[in-house]
Every structure is written in C-alpha cells, then in structure tokens.
Image 1: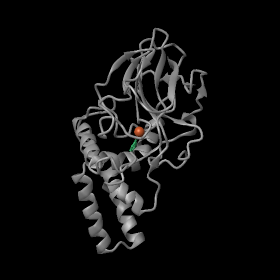
Image 2: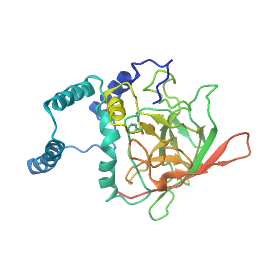
Image 3: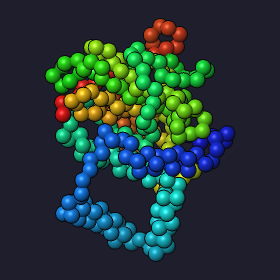
Image 4: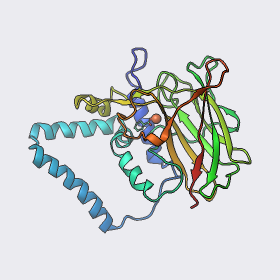
Length: 288
Ligand code: BEZ
Ligand code: FE
C-alpha cells in the first residue's frame, strides 16, 4: 500500500493486526491441512531453517549489536501483527513453487495477506462493489473456467480482490469502504465469467511497519506491480490461487513479493466504450 500524507500512519498496524486475526482463525480453509506434525518432519524442516540462520551468522560474522537489533525487530513484527505480511512477502513464493510442482492446470502464484472471506456473491456478468465515483480505468476481465480435459465447469466461483487506483485494499486501509473491489462471481452454465471493475495500481507494502522498514534499510524496492488476485474454485477440483499482472508495468520482474510470472501478464485492449479496457483469461482447474 502506498503511504500518503492523508493516510493514517497507523494503517500498517491496522492492516497487520487484521491479517494476523485472519491467519490465526485459519479462515483460508481452502488450504489448511491439519493433524499432528511428524517429529521427523519438524526436525528436518526446523533444523534446516535454523541451520540457514546459523550459517548466515557465521558467514557474515554477525555482531551482538546486530543480534540485539534482530531481536528488537522480531518483537516489533509481533507487536504490529506483521507476521503474515513479512512471511507472504519474503517466503510464500517459495512455498507456492513447491505446491506448483504437484498441481496441473493454470499457473498459480501466492495468496498474500489481503484475502477476505464473506464478500459479495455475484452472478456473471458482474460489477464489483465500488464507490459511485470509483477512480481508475474501467476494466472487464472475462473468460471460461474448465477442467484439465476441457470440460466447462458450470457454476465455478471466481473470488476476486484488488487495490483501488491509489493502491489501497478495502478491509485493510481506512480509505476504501468495506467490500470495495472485492467479490465472488459465479460463472454461467458454460463456466464463463465476466467481471467489470477498475484497473488496479502498483503499490508499496506498508512502509511504516517493520517489514517495510527492513526492506528500505536493505535498499530493496518495496513495490508490487499492479495485480488482480483470484481464487478459482469448482467442486471436485483443486483451488487455483493466482494473480494477474499488466504488460508494461514498471515493477514487473522486480516484485517485492517475487510473485509475478510471465504467464500471468495481461495485455488489456480498448473496448471502444470510452476509456474501458478488456482482457480475456481462461482458467484450467485440476481434478482432485
Ligand atoms: C499482495 O498480494 O498484495 C501481497 C502479497 C504478499 C505480501 C504483501 C502483499
Ligand atoms: Fe495484492
């Protein structure tokens, strides 16, 4: 999210604690597993992670001053509720790559921390909830949802969320109203969907919290290219978690969350209706 003077400096804390509540509740149940962890697995994964950090300490000759600064930084990640943000910016893309090794169908990418349950349920063709004077280029995203064998998936759900033209997510920043530019669209009996919205904007992760501060301290770019998030679901099929980006975006290839992929780039074209643009994108879901 971009940081502007008229936006409260507490947005990082507000967004962070909201994302933490969602992660704690396990609301993203489409991905959660369960059960008791196998001690051998815990030892292998946690052991490898700790050894990675110990190797960094040895190789970089980390000082006590740096170790104490690291402790303070970890505590502030907890205090601001930024664990979901930090983990989704810097680690989720690797987990997604592992998951993609065993998932057929359309290319996916990370979920990120800004998905919300319980949004407007809409039939295709649908217009996402938005303000009367919602800024931004009107955009249509349309396509068909099929199974890997080409069968249309009637009634597939396309859960979509993205920022407004200023880079703010509803539900996490104070500016856009609740539910703005979010919705769950039901495809027709041929699996076809059509969604009318506004083109989103590139944005920075919150810069006033520890994740953004660390990013800036390291001299790394805090920007994400503009993107549309999608969760595409149909009974008997694995959920597709993906994002769509825009050709020509200056932050493509330098996404702070490392989530952009060439296969996920849209090239919207004018429809001839004012400044409206349109992109067509089909989704292929793998049977469970
Ligand atoms: C996002 O998609 O908005 C996002 C993903 C990972 C970290 C932060 C934001
Ligand atoms: Fe996002």
